[in-house]
Image (cartoon, one colour):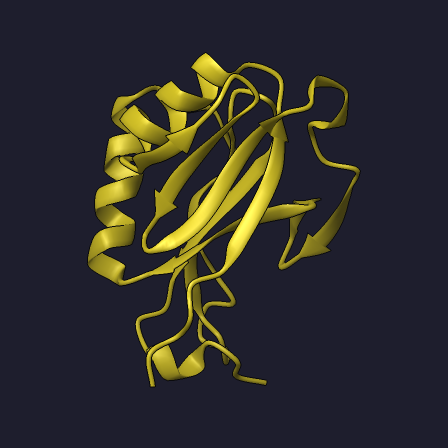
Length: 139
């Protein structure tokens, strides 16, 4: 069964910076826009950067497998090949990672490659990949 696309609206403090980051760095095609928001195609999902300068950034961190994970955050589960390609592209763009590309839960259920970064407004994103996609919800 194909998954329905999700929609996520999130705050940014600079639409031009968001357009560059999501469009040029992450490679998201741009959809509709106005002076206050921009739609992006996030691997078939609709994310919308809304101009709301006083609402950006994370609120707290939770510890997961030895790392302080920013909350809130959003992202994608990619194939291992696409995850590695994105990690290389982000490194080439001199991205400052919150959590460097790494493997989490090594040798345990749910083992995954993961990386956390921030967009120019300070919103946290996570990109992860499972060698075994059936482990996505493993206990």
